[in-house]
Length: 258
Image (tube, rainbow, N blue to C red):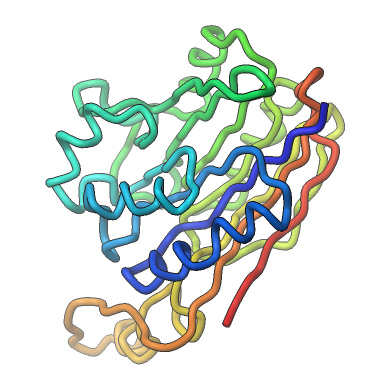
């Protein structure tokens, strides 16, 4: 049987969330999507609220992943501690609430999603994601495994894809908010894309008002980042997987915009 999994890039700002809510169910119907993973860590620009998580799930997300802004809105902490559908990076400190991977029942059998965060160029030092995912995989009993690496460096994401080739169904990256054009099937059958892109303001610098980013890079005194106004876009990737073998047979980038 053929299974289609949609991975959606970082939802940025309330306007990005509203665009996701308008587009996701129709996109699922149009592409015959069976399972959907959405990165939601920037729904409040820095972080996500419980209400925003509920809205993403209601809009059609089966799982929500987070990243370096997991704790940007502390009201999410009790929600995250109780939720099975919202994942924070598995290689954060084990003393922090929440879970980094989950297994979900579908008509194709159990589907596992693992959320990881990279170490290159980040502001802190989580556990090694390469060693962490190896430990997690030893606990898996399903062939349908999908891994997200929330990371800055393309080399770190590529290395993760190659290490997991043949061991998981697909690996994708998030965090940079810029969709890459390297969708592929690796030699042993793992689907791969370095970065999904973002869901949010189209005419922006990573979702932020361009003039604010320009001022920062010029060295000017700037204020708090604000999301850009105007039309939005949704970016991601559809991975088609043979549910019997767990091998990915097709990876297709998705780009929607007003």
